[in-house]
Length: 146
Image 1 (cartoon, helix red, strand yellow):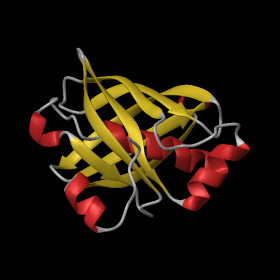
Image 2 (cartoon, rainbow, N blue to C red; image 1 turned 180 degrees about the horizontal axis):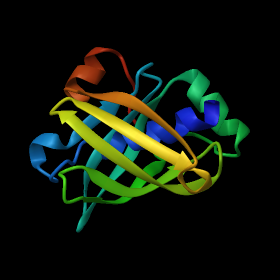
Image 3 (spheres, rainbow, N blue to C red; image 1 turned 90 degrees about the vertical axis):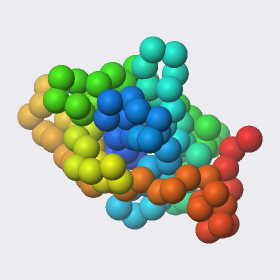
């Protein structure tokens, strides 16, 4: 279950680019706010990098061989789909794999992230929310990677 949660942390990042509009770029957090991912334009696609991880999320990443979770690019090559959602590659540190992930945008601040394993036989989804950005996060005493 912990590994699937990491999948969703990565998927959360992809949510911010429904039509790759600047208004959608930003920082997204999962249901427990244990990971925050900054989504930005990366050339012709969209990517997402961890800017905050709780102590527990960091400990899980270290168990998987990473020095830190903050700074890891979890979302790569995300592109809009015909229905205005996103699809791309998601790196899951605790599993040490890259999977295909999708993001369905419910509204401008809410996204349903979905990840599947075993060729789509087992799927899990989570609802992520967009936070106002670095200013709000700093006001909440969150440390960001340089």
